[in-house]
Amino acid sequence: MSDQAFHIAALVVYFAAMLAIGLYFMRKNNSLDEYMLGGRGLPPAVAALSAGASDMSGWLLMGLPGAIYAAGLVEAWIAVGLTIGAWLNWKFVAPRLRVYTQVSENSITIPSFLENRLRDTSRSLRIAAGLIILVFFTFYVSAGMVSGGVFFASSFGMEYRTGMLLIAGVTVLYTLGGGFLAASYTDFVQGLMMFFALVAVPVVGLFAVGGPSGVAATVREVDPALLSMVGGGASLLGIVSALAWGLGYFGQPHIIVRFMAMRTLGEIRTGRRIGMGWMILAVLGAIATALVGVAYFQQNPGVTLEDPETVFLLLGQILFHPLIAGFILAAVLAAIMSTVSSQLIVSASALVEDLFKVGLKREATDRQQVMISRLAVLVISVVAAAMAWTQNDTILGLVAFAWAGFGAAFGPTILLALYWRRLSTAGALTGMVAGALMVGIWGNIDGGIFDLYEIVPGFVLNLVLAVVVSNATHKHHDEVTDEFDRTMRVIDAGGSAEEENAPATA
Image 1 (cartoon, rainbow, N blue to C red):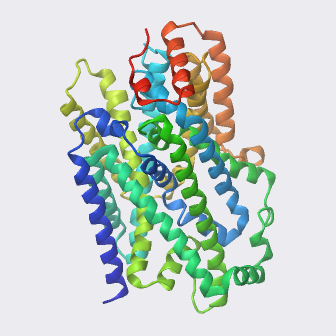
Image 2: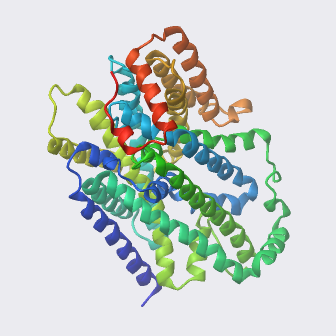
Image 3: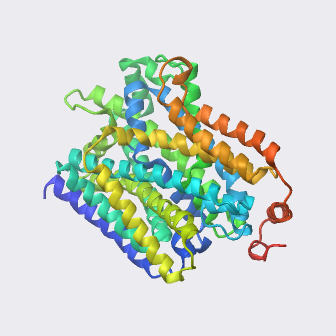
């Protein structure tokens, strides 16, 4: 049996498992709340690994190891920024968002929460937020499909479009059928796969290169600067830009929606510990993989690495039996597919809950809403696949741009909505739009201060304008004040399920 046959067998098992999960949860979606948010029933471990897997994508297994392999630990600053941002997100956003979204008319999307929180009767805030999510995530999904096509082309010699359609088809099938719960539980499995792969490859690799001392000595032979986080031409602006990636977490809808879906406030601390433990070990595994790779290929000059971003894949194929190497390949697919499925659900929720239902003159039944949501997943998938039909690097480049766009558009708005009583509709809308526009403008100018990652000016502009405009336009609203106070009481009391589900005070 050839190595490729073992690899294909592993991928078949993986695909079958993902489809089985989707089929299992297909029968558990009887309402829009269940299809889009899982009925707020996610256990902490599932929420934690789902958030991590949908966040990291192929960057964790290919992008980060490749960057460190090529340039050294100076590229690890982005991992530091993301880890800090993820912890702050779990600590300060997760508890309040979980409680506040339920207190505020059981909001199941970020746009609907902002509308309900601020009592925006014009619906402009909800529509603007829904459009931002829909547009950016369609590009995001398309980028994931491109990544899948490239993966199959490079790993199996498959035609790009065939590989793209294969990964798109499997992901869409389990997401279309099982909705949010299928996306979350497949993310959980995919997160475990990514974790074990990122631990196994560097640990086994250490034995092949003489242990930690062997890695350090060999890497120094190649270039001592590879082991420095401030060497290799690192600039203060570059380090700040890398750390600033952490700001994006507060505004990523596909990540923070996991907080909204957790069972109770009391389980968020458990989720944070699991999620951060997973993330720290996974990131360290990715960094270690790169350094082990530098040592291995230096010690074995007969083995060549053509593309630094494939260091994880090539080490996995060298160090393990072909069947195990096949599951390591599947872990890369898991990283890609977990992100795509999460983004499909959030995009569909924006299309149905925040745009379609706003213009609908009559209330659809639960069955009709679920069917419409599945149709939305299919439509968005077809559009994204059409965009990815011709491999286009500009689409992949939009991933970093979209992270900044979401972080700058929604990050300050979410924080202010959760922590500041005086936020107004005009302030939230002005800041959100200005933040997104600033990212678009700043990101297309090069040189000098414009080399700073565009999320920083976008985030700051949103925050400043939201505060200034809100102070100028804020009007007292009894229901808004009562909701804010009730949310704080539930959080202070530890958030029992009974309190969270109690009727709101008038």
